[in-house]
Length: 206
Length: 206
DNA sequence: ACTTATTTGTGAAGTTTATCACTAGGTATC
DNA sequence: GATACCTAGTGATAAACTTCACAAATAAGT
Image (tube, rainbow over all chains, first blue to last red):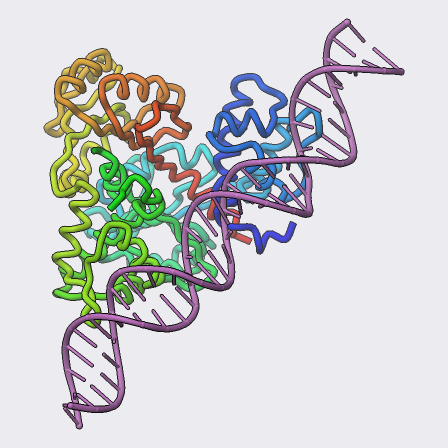
């Protein structure tokens, strides 16, 4: 299990496998196969087997995979067999929507602190969440040992926020701002950009 | 410009190029180069040149690219030199946040119709948007000739919604539900799944 | 005019990723 | 228990994608 050489693209598929296993579990399956999974995910069975092979052997020939067991194993590999504390930076429309979204907590990602620079918002509570001054970010994030953050600020402010987060000890950032973030090596950044997706799709509209 | 054989992955980078060109323009640049672009985007200059080569020749040796011109050309390639009418299905927390987000319209994607199945919401206006009954989807979408849709319903309902949308003439779907959508060939689907990104990143957290 | 420094576009080479195809092991049925 | 049928794991092969490296073109300075 030399995880250091697992391709990003493989790691990126693990959450999809996990999600699909949960769906199978909810539908009453106790066993499944790479073929079944592949069919539901829209990829080949060989790819699933190859991906899983990076981490060990989880199936049984002739039978396939035990849903619950594979679920637990993938959760452990992804480090989602524990809860994570998440910092959210930016409490505009997007930040508010994210903080209100219960899906994160349901999957073990708890938005425990929220930062904004607007004096009108700071110190107030919105839906159970207290907004802290952006100036206090370093102190709070580092003292709480937070490793995960979500950036939901305007593009021009994102790089600055990212640097402050990293300095405070954050190791992974989910970035909703439409800009590339330059951070220290070892810090992970993932991007969410709906506009880019829409533009990509409109390419194919005749 | 045999667009039929342009790899998806190349098309997926075009919005990033476009975005970066806008940022350069805002900063006062009139000319740029593949090297400059690459540095800002975090990819190699060769890749940018190779990508653009799929669509024609846009630069001048020794000089580089004229920002405005390349911008217009990429916009035309992506079909974003025109406005698009978008249907939004699902007006829960996520759908409401999306409908309130002005970024879509600012980039030419106008959420003109919103659907929900909740009788309490139907017919009411929220922030300038009227909610229609999900039952009217086929009629309204097809009569307005809408080709683009955003799905923001719970996972269990997404496949059904997708099928109704496609039947009504939709050709591209941005799916926020955490499920794979199976649609007719030729219909594009893009996925947005923040949880998957967080899980992917937590893999790297020691 | 000549030299130096850029930069694009692109064939060739290299790397990464996905598929194929097979072996070994397990199940089910008659 | 013999036969037919599945399925995981995996080396080999193929496809996809990225980088390299260079010729041709342009600009700028001396």
